[in-house]
Image (cartoon, rainbow, N blue to C red; front, side, top):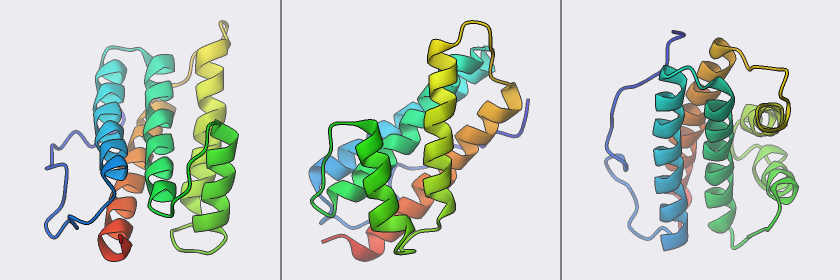
Length: 147
């Protein structure tokens, strides 16, 4: 299996800010759980469903970051667009995370709605690793910039 980072870690790194919005913290917890679920699904060969879970981890992380700016949205496209405007275009976080969020959304749609296509194991493993990397970057950013 393509190198998925299964290493367990505490939910919050050393020095984690207690002043973070409670909803933000819940979204990050959900992202962690969703990454772990994606890994389990991938380990059992459920690539399409695992891809969906990996995308949702990316989505929850983007939502958490936007929540800390007082922004909430009801649609995926709105979250993706606002994340791009608030974090990618401003270069507060690496622009690759916005690209990964867009690509993840597209991959999730394939996994959810295409019956004649199966997402490759390596592609899903990459999505999971990207979600972990995005989570680490978001945690680092929020640790420095949370209210």
